[in-house]
Amino acid sequence: MMDWTDRHCRYFHRLLSRQALLYTEMVTAPALVRGGALHLLDHAPEEHPVALQLGGSDPDELAEAARLGQAAGYDEINLNVGCPSDRVQSGTFGAVLMKDPALVARAVAAMRAEVDAEVTVKCRLGVDEQEAEEVLPAFIEAVASAGCERVIIHARKAWLQGLSPKENRDFPPLDYGLVLRMKTRFPQMHVSVNGGIADLETAREFLDAGLDGVMIGRAAYHAPWDVLADADRVIFATGRPAPEARDIALELIPYIDDHIAAGGRLHQVTRHMLGLFAGRPGARVWRRVLSENATKRGADSSLILHALDEMDAAQRAA
Image (cartoon, rainbow, N blue to C red):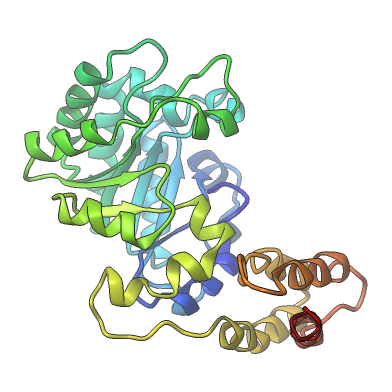
């Protein structure tokens, strides 16, 4: 998710789940190939398995970006054909590409020719006035013919005009049934569902219904412990017990210290931690202490301990 799932967010989420596949925020191929923004590929070894999500429309540029991603060590290269953002559309990236499945297929083929890492595609049911029942199977056939073996389908259409990116995540109706029908129609394709899924129980239901994977975005960001902490047991059957949220906060302190020592700022990490205690007593105090103090000059990891103490005090006073 753009501006959300940066390397600090992914490191934090990896502490919660050892098994879940993590995704970068979308990185545009031109930024990597022409803009020299190779710092966007930075990630910690602990993040694996991790996928690089690319945006772009030029097959050659996407192939080169995929090569750079593989060289940086990413386990999967994902092409985003689902983002409805205006700034993405203006570069002919994201959901607008669902109008040109042949171009997407050429891009997938070019990327696969360049890398050994798996190349996957994230898409919508369709865009604007398209009939999803018609265009989605044709789209999947196109990318499958180019060698794509895994698609992640956001179970909504994207409206490229008239709805904001936020509205595109909420208002177009969800059609999970169509995603399930795509798995039936393309049994050889690894099909994952995305959109509106907020808990592990629902994710488990989709897997039991025959889908191969479930992508959870906003819910995992806003309530990370609720969604990710028990994923290894519920989804991956590893037997790993859910870590305590407090232990996760403490485990991040050495990472924060290293980040600050390298010239980083505390809030660059803590902004992703605000929802760690979501729904629990004292969560509002935790969020307030971090929000009000992490951007201050000289703020360091001791703020984590202070926030925990303040949260404990609020719980005792309740």
